[in-house]
Amino acid sequence: MTAFPFTRAMIAPSLTFGAMSAFFQFGVQETLKTFAIVGTGNANAGYVASAVLTAGLLLATIVVTIVQLASFAGRPGWTGTTAIALGALAVCAVLLGPATFYVTIGAFAGLCLYAIPAAADGRRMADAIAESCRVAIAESKTTFGIIALLAVAIIVGRVIAGFFGFFPALGDLVAGLLVQAVVATQAPRIAATYLKLQPDLTGQ
Image 1 (spheres, one colour):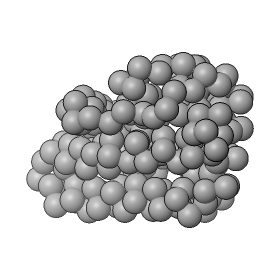
Image 2 (spheres, rainbow, N blue to C red):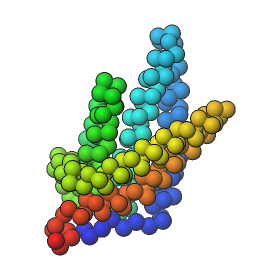
Image 3 (cartoon, helix red, strand yellow):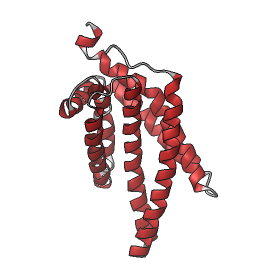
Image 4 (cartoon, rainbow, N blue to C red):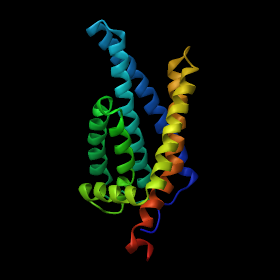
């Protein structure tokens, strides 16, 4: 493998997935808030539970999008099992978030950022995650830049969503599309950073 080809053809499926996931998140959030409020009589409990679930779904959406883009590159590799492992780690990171001031979420996002390219390169699940951690530490500036950009997209997306209080589903849709657009455009950069530290692939 010499590169992850990136074409405009990737954008449309990514945004379509973003729209679907945004509506799914909205539906699950509203359902969860209703059950939490009915069960506890406390609206705050419903909103907290909804916020935690949203964070988990957002992480899962990003992971699945990168898997999708790796498949476009014709290198599916071990992305399936690695994605499942990342999903489990994402759940743990989100659940531990409130107790760790959300450091676990940031750590997960940064250290596991390159796991899918590593899996698409043929590495098995554990090796892919370990290699991702190595690349993330070695290329800390690039990793931080990508995570910061994703964080800004998420924050801006939520701010935009807030302007659609009269139609929350539309706000979630706009936010979801924005995040997915950033993920889709950053995927080649993620792959390139991974490839940079693979001497057998770059010829270094």
